[in-house]
Image 1 (cartoon, helix red, strand yellow):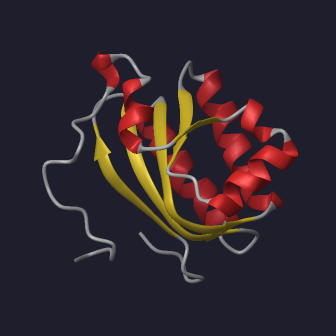
Image 2: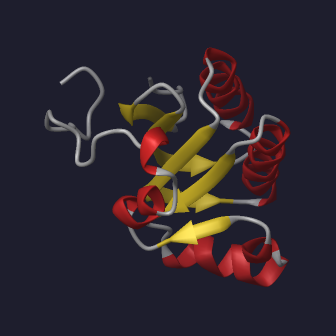
Amino acid sequence: MTHANGLAVNLVADCDACVVVRVSGALDHVGEQFFRTTMGGYVDTGYRFVVLDCSALVYCNSRGLNCLLGLHWLLGRRRGRLLLACVGRRVQWMLDHTGSREVLAVFPTVSRALASLPVAVRPAWPPPHPVSAEPGI
């Protein structure tokens, strides 16, 4: 699923309670509503644990940070968790300098993020099928 400005939010793996989602491009004011709507849809579907693979997230400003904090809050209300994986230097800098790193769980890899969850709520990882960088391929 791709937004017009190049922000992409793609499901990579899932099970009943957990979803792994790859976020690509820029998470800013242009993609904010798309991100909130897409991630809200996943939560409404019943996913309580969300692992965001941020390896292709090249930019995230304060509006994007608000999206992440909002998702963290929403999942907490549903007794779940938001876990960020593969966060790049720019996004890491923002998390560190805003104090958000103390609120948001950050892991070096998706595998490490999933390992922090109970076995019963983890999807198969790595996914059984190859994941393409381009939607629909």
